[in-house]
Length: 331
Ligand code: UT7
Image (cartoon, rainbow, N blue to C red; front, side, top):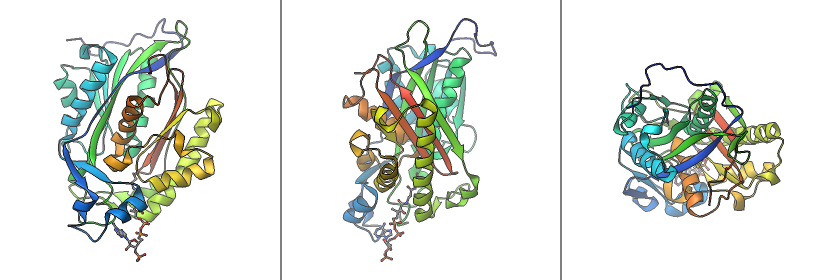
């Protein structure tokens, strides 16, 4: 096992660094909860849910650590590395296994690691926050960071509530984020720009008390989400000196297809260039973007050199956009 006991990171000679998303993995629990299943508990219909949200089914069951581990192992295998090479574990989740401690140390332990491991709570924006934090740690000399987004939202969702019960499900996605040396490899991957934001004025539009299920003002969440997506995407584009036409694929948080459509209209984004898995996963909060990324890679939708935009938004409110140039390791 590596000695991580406070060793100072190596910062000399790393030059301008880039990052590759060297391996991605995803995990969904087996148990499916369809829209038709929900009609047994609430007055709703498959047609209404599909039309108003774009969701067909969601997964329930499993644990946040278990799903994290499954996704992480797939990401490690896809990156072709040994788990012992990982310097840091960041687990974005709003549904940890325990109120205390965080879930990341248990995941690290199962991988045979004693490196730094912490949970990151930024709700549905969490995985994109994690990506930006990882980029900063690479700049401090770390070489490989495991960034996971994982949720078991079924334990905080009231499936007899018409507003929230139709939306949320479980899942996990993970990425091995690897430092590259841009001096030596100018075609390596790179985080071109990002925008992280929050507005705590809106805490109460989507929240859960300790031990309780989520409460939501759906209409207000919808309205605020569209506003912050438009703002954050434009800020990130401006910071990178890019326009919409320069983006090859957009991977938004999978909350509601109508939120995406409304935001895209103003931004001039196209749904054809958008990766969606919402129909079969529902809203999996911090897991949704890496789940959609995994699916996009599986379907050959990302090529080497492509520019990909991740857009997270959710409770807090928080939002996070990251524009990433893919290195030479895509399909
Ligand atoms: O990560 C962020 C997580 N949160 C979100 O993404 C939530 C964003 N908001 C939403 O997705 C939508 O607000 C919902 C899908 C939750 C609700 O859709 P809506 O269009 O805002 O519905 P509403 O509450 O305004 O209700 C409209 C109608 C009402 O009927 P009337 O009064 O017009 O006759 C409701 O009774 O739809 C009815 N309704 C339903 N019908 C069937 C509300 N919920 C349901 C339902 N099934 N589940």
